[in-house]
Length: 188
Image (cartoon, rainbow, N blue to C red; front, top):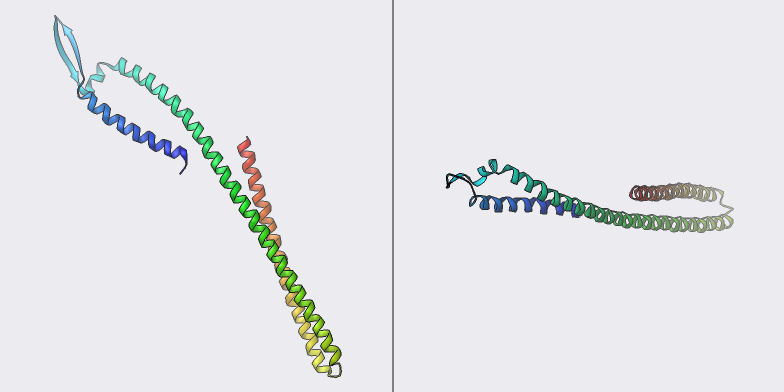
């Protein structure tokens, strides 16, 4: 919950409490006028505002104006605090996203290197086997076909890993762009 919401809730509670206090206070008030040295009560409670409207209006303007100015100043300060908190949250999210992208990229590179190393080892093994069993032409053809299939699958995996790394870089660039836009918005 941001601070501006807290201020609005407290303002509403304050208005309700103020109304209940004023309502109980108004029940004990009266408007009286003197005529021929005799006091006559004209009105009691809330209806006396009809007689005392200039005083009530002046009190509303003065008190309401001062309170409004104070509340507007406080609201502006709290808005700044909320914006700073939101910027900090976005910075943290950006750092987390950057770290996630870097980690994913590193994992994909390690996976790709492992697959290439495994492919190289398998290819070396296939060549040794081919040299040893050259006499058996049919067996050698099977081994070559297997090597081509493994290479094709490895190339597909390499392409998939490169696509994933490219996608991770795009996400990183978008996150950086969003951060710069937010930074520009807050600077203006």
